Amino acid sequence: MIRVSLVPVAVGICYLFPWDGLRSLTTLLSVATTQWAFPEFVRVGSDRAAFPGIVFQYTLACTLVDAWCGAIPLVWKIRSSVARNLGYLAVLAAFVFAMNTIRQAGVNLLYGAGLPLIPVHDVLAASAYLLLWIEILRRGAWRENASLPLRAPAEGLHPARA
Image 1 (tube, helix red, strand yellow):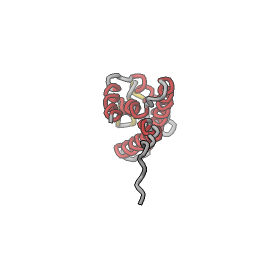
Image 2 (cartoon, rainbow, N blue to C red):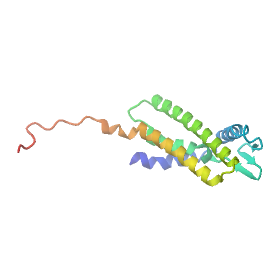
Image 3 (cartoon, rainbow, N blue to C red):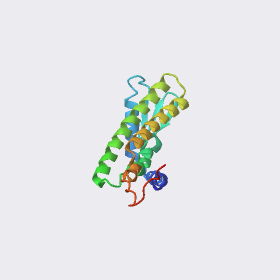
Image 4 (cartoon, rainbow, N blue to C red):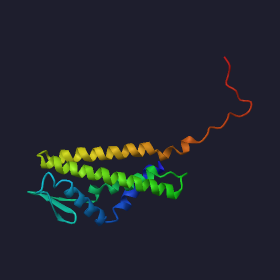
């Protein structure tokens, strides 16, 4: 329960920072991965891109950094060294960043092809969160304590015989 209660704290701390560089990089990659198919999709600011008729602003949630921060209490292994945990978090950050880049490109390409924005965005966002959740479950840091050896029964206590 402690780990779960730390998730909103970690996400709240994440939102204390503007993440301007990450939002700008996400915007840049979103446009770059889409322009081959839709050259009219252009960057119009550090965190904004436009298709004809609509401007997208890339917010903190568009980077999935809030989901990564929220995952920290769930994946941190208390029995592992700080260096090992930080190494894992770096790999997880790369995974989330790559997955998000693919997600953003997918949203742009499907929207550009004429599909409605909201359902496309929501389905691909839910898919990204599901993949992250699967990785959190795979890591299973909360199972550390469950792996402690069971104590042997006290001397003289035996199961009843029928």
